[in-house]
Image 1 (cartoon, rainbow, N blue to C red):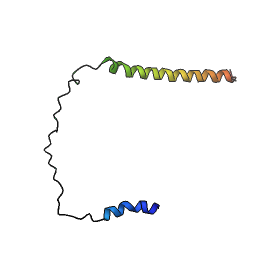
Image 2: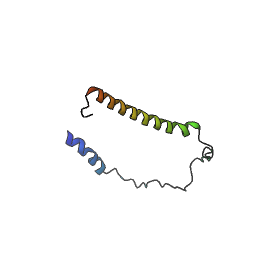
Image 3: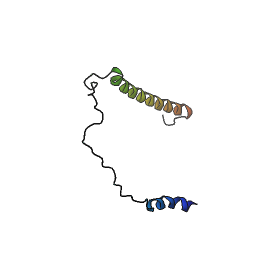
Image 4: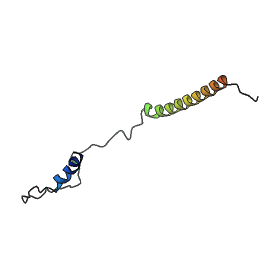
Length: 86
């Protein structure tokens, strides 16, 4: 069954589909757009406050959370085990 499924596409490609003398359609591309697109005016405008302030704020919060979790872990380890050598 697996062999039949694997060989079916190859057999379909090898089949003669009966050429009627039809030639494939010719595609003409003159390089122009199918639908004209107006220029984007947002490029000249200032960025909104969310774009300017949100990513740096998220990065700062992420760094603070990671530092806080690391400090909490270290304090928890020091409380759990007695530090010898002081």
